[in-house]
Amino acid sequence: MASAASSTTAPAISHKIKEGVAPLRAGQGISFFLRRLHSLTGIIPVGAFLFEHILISNSTAISGPAAYARQVTFLGSLPLVFFLELFFIWLPIAFHGLYGLYIWYRGDGNVAEYPWTGNWMYTLQRWTGGIAFAYIVWHVWTMRFAGIDLHAYPSASFGKVQEEVFQPALFIFYVVGLIAASWHFSYGIWLFFAKWGIITAQRAQKRFLVFCLLFFFLLTGVGLASLAAFRSRPQQPIEPGMAAKVTQSAESR
Amino acid sequence: MANKSVILRIKRQPNPAAKAHWEEFELAYKPNMNVTSCLMEIAANPVTREGKATTPITYDSNCLEEVCGSCAMLINGRARMACSALIDHLEQPIRLEPFSKFPIVRDLATDRSVIFENLKAVKAWVPVDGTYDLGPGPRMTQEEQEGAYPLSRCISCTCCMEACPQFNEETGFVGAATISQVRLFNTHPTGKALKRERLAALMGDGGIQECGYAQNCVEVCPKDIPLTKAIAEVGGEVMKQAFVDLFRR
Image 1 (cartoon, rainbow over the protein chains, first blue to last red):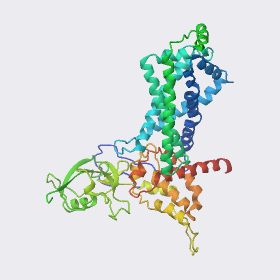
Image 2: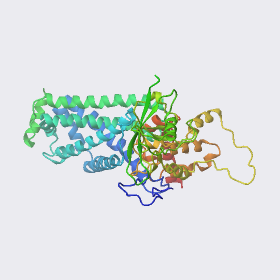
Image 3: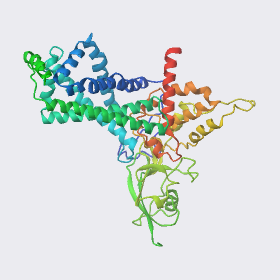
Image 4: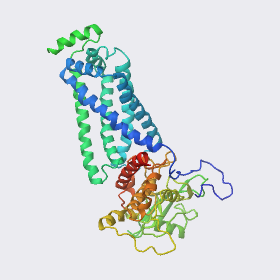
């Protein structure tokens, strides 16, 4: 390959001479495996968990504190729940998030020069991923590891969430995190189907994009309805002793 | 009408190590001008807009009809072919820059040989070689021909690579053109003898996995090659091959 070294008599080098992009390294490295694993973990288990978290579990908040406590009790009573969390939630999210940041760092977004839909989606996928990851790290910390342990006191769950969503700044953070994660997952499904060669033709890809957009509205809509449910009820107590009692009375409401 | 002029701002650099600078040129407008014809006029009379004598602009070009792939450059910030960039369709002053992701040779000429290294790495050819007549090859159906023809129009101009956010020194991404050529040669009845090797090559670092599906490639391609479709199809094939290699090799 002709290199950048010039044959002219040593010109004064005022900047770094561009080396150029390296050719394909056929048969080298494991980036194919890592990148495909990143793509897969985004759907299963991370995306599947988001589906469950928003559409199945959190939506029970719409029915009230008692229904919500029942769902949290059920999740907490799953066998080997710590290992389920570790291998199907925390580790996959950590890998997907951290490797995703590495992918973001390596790309050179260029929407200013090429402001087309696909390119905007490319950039948006990186920003929503970053925002969602920051939100998730905070959310897991405050809900799972800080404050009252919801595995031990599931009936305190509703009140614990309320404590956060009643604060305007944190409520906005919830909404932003919800929208970012929903978008990232919805467009991520589209990307998965394109990258794995499942939907290849441009027309079919456009149709599927509409489907993914509808899925985004479903996730965001149900998520917002659940958040509204937390804010629409009076603050439930979160002290271990009190919580159980109040939830009982809330059921009759 | 008669006094209409064309103004070009051109980024110049006498050698790879020198600092780049801009020069402005003004040409008398003529109907049907394109960027290459402007560069030819400047070469005939290399004087800047301020009346300062300068050197002719260095740039690559050959066919002048968008089939050789030489004259790719950034025109008003976008990757495209100079020969098919009509002055009537461009906003003035017209900004000409060399491609930003390839080593600069001089002025608008860049060293784009990486695409040939990539094409070699995926064996983008039909393996017929020998000292005697092998007879006629297998026939392709009309449908296969229609699928392959658009891909065969690739002129290796590297516009798809320049416009790709994933194509940079950090990733060493192979780029859309090479992936579409894998698709072309893997569907060729004789070319598919090397199918596995091509797919395996695309699993290497800088391979198909680096595609972020920004889809700029298909937008800038001067030959309207269905690049994103080719990438998706080859992506699926590479994935299948990865499983086959994992379990059966």
